[in-house]
Amino acid sequence: MKRRALVIEDNEQNLYLMSYLLTKRGFEVVTARNGREGIEAACREGADIILLDIQLPGMTGHDVAREMRRDPRFSSIPIVAVTSYAMLGDREEALAAGCTGYIEKPINPDTFVAQLEMYLGQSGGSSG
Image 1 (cartoon, helix red, strand yellow):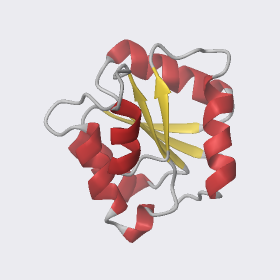
Image 2: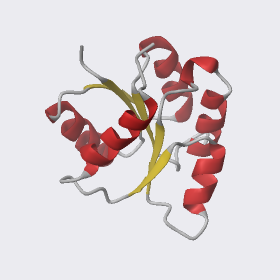
Image 3: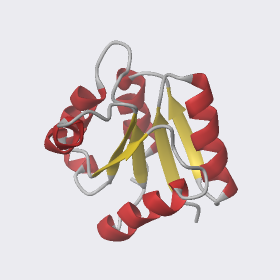
């Protein structure tokens, strides 16, 4: 059974690149363009891992992570912030909001999926 990744990202090029890399490595990819869509997609589709941009229209990635962590269905699913926010304290803020990990943009296409698989290994996440 394919692993499912939910990518919540409003930038078309970033969304394409992440989706391409994940698909190439055998993931089924579900996408959303904003936080509300992402939460709805997670509820509807399930995911083994959630990739979350922090700077989203409408509701921030921090808000999305906090809301998802309040739902028991998502308690064991890794949520990885994939963001250009790279200032001092940004990583800590993402982790405090409920993210499992943090990857800075621009992503490295050669190591991106391997980084994500580390988080999958830690959680034992499963579609649901």
